[in-house]
Image (cartoon, rainbow, N blue to C red; front, top):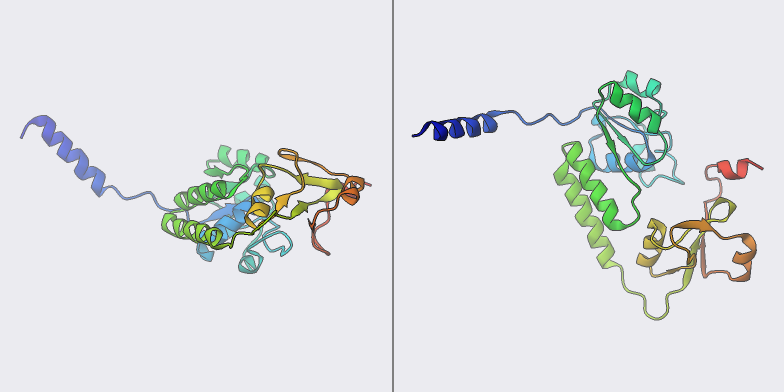
Length: 227
């Protein structure tokens, strides 16, 4: 055997013998979207803390599963004492905390804004890989795809629906809300691309068949608080 062949064989033997990187055991979420991914993918004992919104049933799809898990403000001084070995952050909120955690040597997984089901699946798989639960994440992704395929198609012209939030804020074409309405058999009444506003007068002049708003007793909006 040549010297180069011997070195190659030694390299592969060492690579096979090297232990795999340990999966993070104390994961902290800095964002509501990250809360939901972690609750679905991780065993409870590996979740060091979730965001303050994780248990709010008006906002969180995993409020019941998140009940009893620790919660933490998305601030470095609150997160660091938990000794996390991974933090998961979203596009908004907790940005300063994420940067401070990285400066202190804590790995941070940043998630972007998911504007469709394909983007949700991509982020789910990223989270699964990062926490060592890739198989679990793939199973959840497959379940989501199967659920979407099983929705019976609506015949005829789809009725118009509008997601209407504080101050008339309305997600339009190309947003996640738009994708959800389309999957449910509706046509988004907000024709503008991205995010915009539909004033009350316009809504009353041309009401949609379905109006989706915040539930009664839901969290207060900072926008409406500034009156």
